[in-house]
Image (cartoon, rainbow, N blue to C red; front, side, top):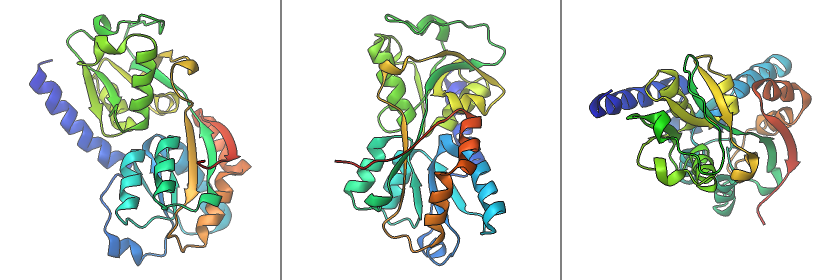
Length: 272
């Protein structure tokens, strides 16, 4: 595939990913006047959280929450810019720490809810085999193509992936062959559509797409712990925020998260 075709495909898939996972810019007045529960959630939570939210609606009789999925960094920045939301679910501790330091969340409501793993994926029909060991070199498996990842400077999955490759001594060999996506689900789509032969995503993302397969899971000691914290936002005035947070911490949501491959932590935690 030529470089132009790769770039064009990547741009199209980035747009498609935004449509599929419901990432949209906010309109302050419209959302501020809405009484629906608004949730900002990391893109990797989509499959599990959609199911948990649907079950909460059935059990509680409450209106369906409006869930906006995007990269955690983008959501934290939107909160900082005044985007109205009631709950924030981040894919890493750093961006929840950022929100807390900016006084955007209720510190006492913060909980470390879930844990996850990252993996190297390929299209489901690929014959590629890779061992994630010290000295790894993915360049041969990539050929003239690129490794799909979330943005390595800001998107949690991209940051974890870069850290893991650095720990294994393989980052310098592929750093110029990265297709960086705005969020992890966009990186997943690049591999699912065959635009990239390899990608780094959460194992839960791989489980959500039958067109990809995990070819290797990164050892947990190669990157910081992957923890998903959740908190009520400082400006939330919706009484359902507390109810939905309680549900997410309970057995009803636990089944949805575990089915997708998350580890449920449910531990109160806050930045020091």
